[in-house]
Image (cartoon, rainbow, N blue to C red):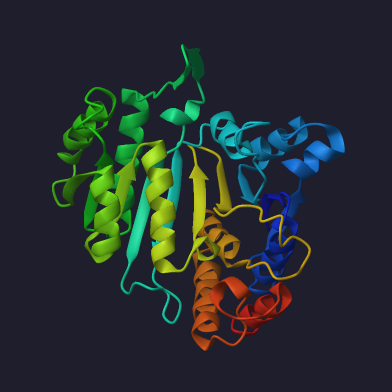
Length: 329
């Protein structure tokens, strides 16, 4: 039995975490869950967004499955996700997305976004200037090299053929220029992998027009955040797309959508994105056979189209979708 930390989060988080755990258990994942509060739920209970005991548990067990948490826009506390990434140096944000038959608007999309997770504008350093504010964009050689090398190693390990660097070096000649320069230098170590680069605005257009032309994308933090959501839209939305935050010895797997407080408690939330994230987690801990079993059940459930939640065009409840996936294991 493998120990993992379970972080239900808030909003629809507890509902979809419960659904995913039922499927994991039914699939024979053989996991021991250590449940801890995080986000608004934790704040309401003890006045802390991330209690020390939660951080200690993640440090101890090194693998966590996290439900969505609420982050106020433009006010209040800083993102819990950003705090976790910095606390454990989770420098990789890995976002795979691929087409689903009967669901996705685009066919044959299979793209993995490798997003740098610790710097860029997400360091959150802003300062007041006359008549406004300015934000610091930080790009360093160590952080850049390790994310780019991770992207190439991922491509190599998973038989991916192409890695594309996303940047804005035509305007940000020093910061993004450094990112592009290091990409070209590291690419020389992988001569059998095709490489190219795209300016972020052009990249967005290319993804909408010709998504089948792209394989692995590597990008600084902000651009990676933007394009990974765009790609999710190509394949059916954030309700289907997982994410992983990976460091040298800790990994946290999550659904990348929000906490959707407007539908919390109504029993209609879609657990598939978090379930897909749990499959990434299973791969990470060496349970690839269980991961494949669950993925096949997800695909069959989507193709059947009989028990889908509202966001997927159906009218099923969370429980009904969960039961359908379990029956298709």
